[in-house]
Image (cartoon, rainbow, N blue to C red; front, top):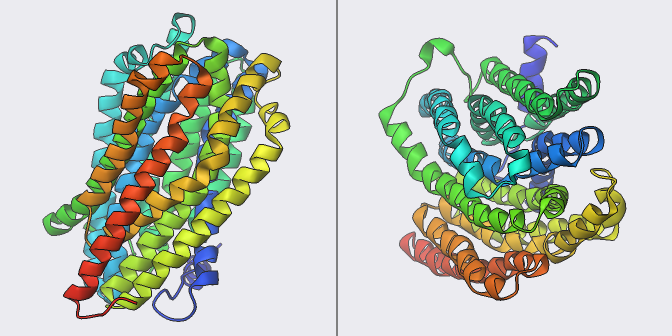
Length: 461
């Protein structure tokens, strides 16, 4: 594809978020975004499926034991990518091309430096993390090998997510999706080659994921270089603009830390899972894949809220911001629920994709019925938190989400789970914490949005 053709395609995939109807536009924006996240999650799912089928239960447990650990880094990066998304989208809403260019170059430079630092930190704490989660001794060496190879890809994961956030800020969710399709296919093919042909077990699936992440990062950079409008990337202009660094950190850091702390709470839960035996660890890993897929729908509508609200807030379209919130909340709940219902109905045959052991499948179904089937509840606090960040409230949603998930789950682990030491009891903490968190964050949005209306001289409808 020529450079001119690519430029034309990029422009044709952008959306006018400031005018016209919202309902269909937001679906068209969100679904490719959800598919991109699902494909990114398929990196780990492909690892789980291949090792479960061709490398045995020990390898499956080793990969599964790392789900929460990997989640800490990935959730930090994905959450932090809200920073460049909000800032660049706001500048596009203001039609400020010169300042958008500064924000773009600062974002990519931050992704490079931040990714390298996170990777180094991960290498240092990889073994303590596995010990903290009570990883079974018989799979400890394999689990650490998988994690260390995976961590080499952190800089590329960060470049892709920050670059994709920039591209989505002008309404293009299709090109990041195309990139994830290419990377996902690469990952699956390499998984099969490394594990089946080369007999590399966990090292093979980790290496396949690393190569796929490198490919995704390279392709997203190519897109930015080819853009000739707001988002053009010129390597000669890569630098850190202090003002935009501060703005990106102000928005992205609370969201990133929220995601990281959210994963830390899952480490406590993973510790409880690991204590229930190797089959339970493997089963939880199987079910968690489908749980992530359904959550990706909810998260996509939250990110849609960020982009749409940021552009319109920057343009002063406050009534439209209010409408965006209502539509995103409705669509997020409905589409997440639909996928959850499909997965719940086909839970057993879907679980069999990852393992042939009936005992593992039976335990996996517990998590799918008790957690994944209610995943639509996450849209209540995800969409509300996204709306709050887009209108200048970064700390409030992070604090409330941490209290509602981390705090609530730790208390549950120390009280209810301690009294009833079963997998079902442990899994029930998820929907209970979602309800609690949703009530708090939705209430905060309603209260603070009224203040925004008053500040700008409007009367809320």
